[in-house]
Length: 219
Image 1 (cartoon, helix red, strand yellow):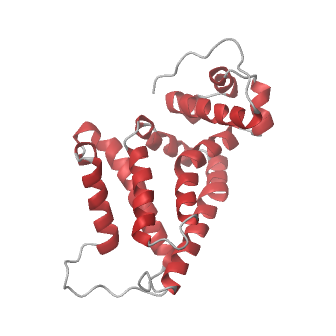
Image 2: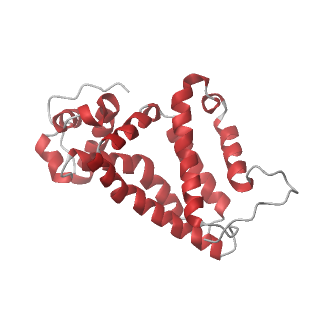
């Protein structure tokens, strides 16, 4: 991702807008330099704010990185599922998949696998990533799945496994797209056709109609 040269003059913004400004700048800098090489002064320059301003919002570069990933990967999906009571699951699923496919086809996705790999090399960042993002997200999604199972909309299955299987599928698509590059079918298929295939896979699995389904475990 090409970073535009920041203006030398600091930009004024309302507190909420400034926070968004910092997150957007941090995303660009992290994508260009990676987490380890990026610095708070780099991000401040890109955002057009003083370095000290960033510390008003985030105590460390690690916390800022987690906030960037949360905005990019977690918050949009969680909001879709949390706002879904009363909606049929296929409607919620389609909304979530459309959101993720837009992200999958964006330039930033080419950098995401490298950014995620840096989390594995930094024990403190890895711990923060799990505690602040992964665990709360999985807990909330399990609540959603258990509710649908109890309502009879989903078959009886282990909700923890189901949540991780769906999340793993999307992460796997991101990694495969990055590894395959322009040759990937994920780049060649029209978005609506890709959406249809993913919807069918999640809703109906691999077993052909009329075949006996595999019995799942209890949640």
